[in-house]
Length: 540
Image (cartoon, rainbow, N blue to C red; front, side):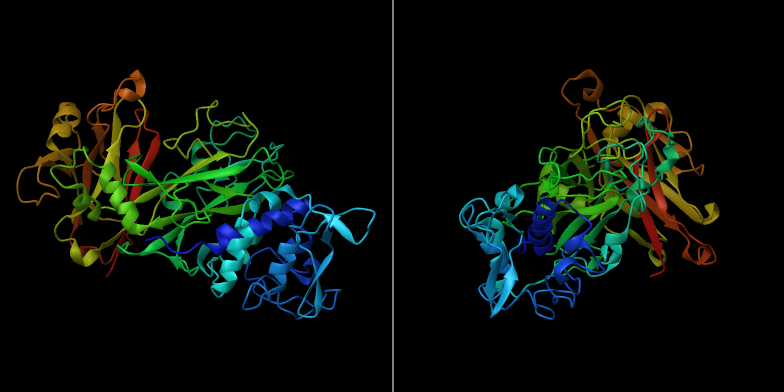
């Protein structure tokens, strides 16, 4: 079952956005980390002078050292400050009494005259967040206080504060409006080959193994960074994707431009080299943990800044939905649930809105979709959810990892195994493929650099052909197996089919070698990389 409402993504990010919208700044006053205006900081939840801390000494209202929260909502200054900001027009006071002190209204009201002591709340975003009865954001905030103010914001790992809030993408000087991207590597600036910008960038601007370098991370509900070896059946994770704006002068998001919300979606997929059957993940911005709404909104991105779009990954639900999606896919006689246990899920994140139209579009304004390539389209990133470890002491016989193959573009595709540091004389690599796809799409091409293994090697699934690599770096060519993508007809029977990678080695002969990741690289007909996956060796 899904866990609780997320404080960081459903509540705190909306509080930030309402303040930013009302003040028209994402970097000053209450967003100043060093000397926050009024002694209160909204930059991140754990700031010493933030929601969970105490008011700084520079406060001019006599509130220094006081806490904005109390054990109940009614006794919490911050709840009363927010609540009073939702009064009727021209009735909002500048301050509200709580615990014998006068606290300033937040978001601050716009002043009217007369009377000078009252204002009117014109922050439309704050009103939108609280439209309805009970007021959604305020109600969620009250419940969070009553639950003991649990903090699920990142406490360690790559998204730890205050470091993450200080990161800036390299500026793209040609950007005149918000220039958005899903980060495919650390320090990503969003530039992609063919985007029409100056100077042009090469394909190598994005790492060729972008599925391993993308800035998509797993956290748990306590804000702890996770790199699990397995995804336990009853576990729940936060999929946190870094989204950036590399425009040096213009912000982005609904807090600044109401007509251009930054919307992001995320699909969980079966382990694959390019694409597979999928299920959309629910947004962690949903007030109801059971809500399946897949759209996560990043409410604002300052110029040259990164933010995070987050999604709920409930293992049982993802597993059940992917197993259902695999029905009818040729898995070599293996049941979908058993197939998934020998592979791993992965995710694809897609920024669907938030920019001015036709602004440096990818590759001549190719339609944006979940099967776009991160090499060309800055709006998409993909990632394997866990380190896929291959224990060296256990690979005297082939260790198999299941994956799904999908057609990328028109024409023959290819699979290449790359294994830097692995000695050829001590290592063997295998591909397994169900018999029917093998006969239709592989056998006729001759699979140069691979030989059929007819005995002595256990199969990963009952109905399959095993191919052993005989030439390091050989490309296994697979004929076009999805006529629907070019002829606009119903997809063929083998749009997706299962395969497996086998790794076999002599552990004793590997100990003196510096082993890199084993990577399967999926290439299109012109040899450009469209995807892949990585397996990481361990000594355990």
